[in-house]
Image 1 (tube, one colour):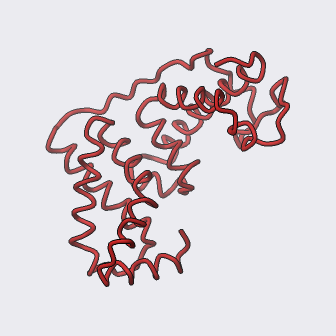
Image 2 (image 1 turned 135 degrees about the vertical axis):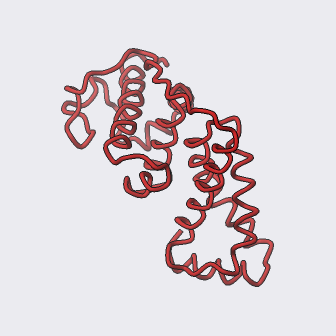
Amino acid sequence: MAQGNDAQLLQRLLRGEQQAFRELVETYQGAMRAVAQAILGSRQADEAVQDAWLAVVRSLPGFQQRASLKTWLLTITANAAKTRYKQNRRELLLDDLRAPHGTLGDERFASDGHWCQAPTAWHQDSPEALLSQEQLRECLEHTVLSLSQLQSSVLLLRERQGLELQEICNLLDLSLSNVRVLLHRARLKVFATLEHFEETGQC
């Protein structure tokens, strides 16, 4: 959502428009859950997001607009998740599951994460065209579910929500190198699924 749209939405929220609040939830709920899940794991992510929404409702009149609405919401979510994490005093499990079809070596990819050589049977014009195939979509969803909580969250925040790496670092209290490694491993597993599907037509 653009900054100008943020300002308009904020004014509608401050006037108490219920439709504006519904739009806010629809637009940012996914990103908020990804942040909460990275910090807490999936079991308590929804509770942390609920805590965050309560904090948003209480804090909205005092929102200074020093950051974008999205950054503000995600920061509140991260704080709510961290509070729950401290209360639970439990450790995150950083399990690094193997990709369904093995792990591709780094030599397959350039430093920017793109293929050095395209998959052998890359018939579609674009990743968007590939994603339109229901079977491939299911394969990719299965692969994302097989990732560790942090890998999945970093991938979703970067690729689906469009956050910069530094924003992800700030929200999750991770170093830039850690975020890069998590993102790289997640992308490798997604690329492995894509390549296998292109070669065999199966998940």
